[in-house]
Length: 431
Image (cartoon, rainbow, N blue to C red; front, side):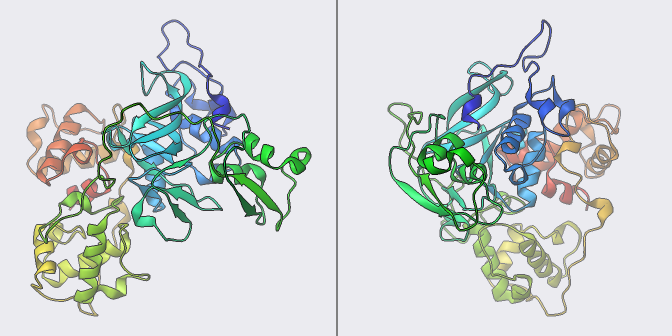
């Protein structure tokens, strides 16, 4: 479906913004208002809808909302996957596309509203290739395909619903070629050929070409039927010649010692060996009751509650017991210091009045009470020098600079200190 749109270009009237106006917004229920706006996220929503997998992707015109959607479902990774929605820029809020192939150094994508001259506002649908380690790549949302998803994330190796491959490919075109090996899929109740094709990361045309007996009734298949799926379709965009040597695929290498690995290794969206180690230490200190399945590499609410319980057991409070490990918490856990978590230690439930309102609440020109609340907390914590007039309800550059200074003070850097509040920044500011 995505491949069939390659070559489309939005119309642009004189004086209109570079993204122009296009046909996709009006065809996606609820997104008609987004025409004449940057439309990369709208295009992904359109592709998902047309492919029959709309529920597996966020229906939104906002890249930031897409990040939140996947992260809130525990489907976020620093590694590419076939059919994943890739998000670009600070906080993932700049641009987006769909991954159809990847190797050890490069991702290959279909993207709307792009061009070689303007990555995120270029008004075309194109195939693009980008370096996996490029700082512009923020991360990947992983749809829950019925047949599972093929991913390069080593932490997901062997887990149900995931197939690990260091390199993998889907179709770069919609010619329906079935060159290469194939595999057989058994149809489940409610599945269609369109959904099976999307789950396999191939076009419907390629799937139909491999199953000529169902061409006349492309979506009239029954549970128990078998469908042949091309495993290695051709026409893939080649990687650039003479690529740089492949770096360690883990974007943040694990700590070599027992020293604190850094606050950026923990919190919403984190997925690394340090989270696993933290969980194991917490279990040893009495936190097993917080884990229904046992510690793993993907940060979850169980980790936050277990950390907070350990912090409370030390008599700490406020920002020192926010459920995010800092150097002191790590030191106590690693070296067996302090008190264990007792069976009576409880963790407070966050007040809904202080719940994170979402990244979309903090964007240029946006006005709401959450912006005021952030500004007031920044002033209270000593960052008032960034304001000439004082905090207001309208998000401004002064807010962004003050937030960035606060984030750097937490020891964060790069995209973790971009000046836009995420869940952890909000949590620490509001305490």
